[in-house]
Image 1 (cartoon, rainbow, N blue to C red):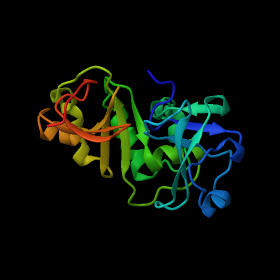
Image 2: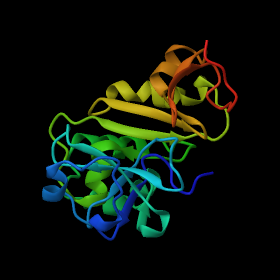
Image 3: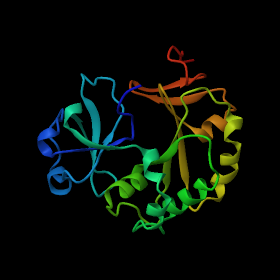
Length: 212
């Protein structure tokens, strides 16, 4: 298993640690600093480096870069963000719909490791107000072994009644797919996001899967 996985949040010492393929946009210098996390992204051409994304204040402000593993000073995984419930309740944005949705999902006591991604995770990790009134909750569920769609029945019954729209991704060792698609297709076929791009597969847990 890779030490750093997609959606992990990493901290580094500053701009000198960033290795971009192209010149970074001007907003990076204006908005990013070493107190803010970088988000691990998918990319097959790692070359021993970690592919990361830099996030700005606006939704369209995203910039790719790389960092060396030795320059990582701190790491948080999505599931780490929900371990301390008291901290969640005292979070400055605890009334935001995505955070309220997390509270409801915690009550289900899901038998999987899971946590938020996207703007909610970034806000929880950084304290920066990047969520708004209509923000969705993006979350991932770790599933290293094959699971039938029926295993997610309690969650499927819950998602339409959550305070906000919720996009749930199932993360396998080889990529991630949308839970709603897996349930709707009854496990027949899903679009799997991989380091090499998206593929259609009938077995998202098989490294040697074939596209139809």
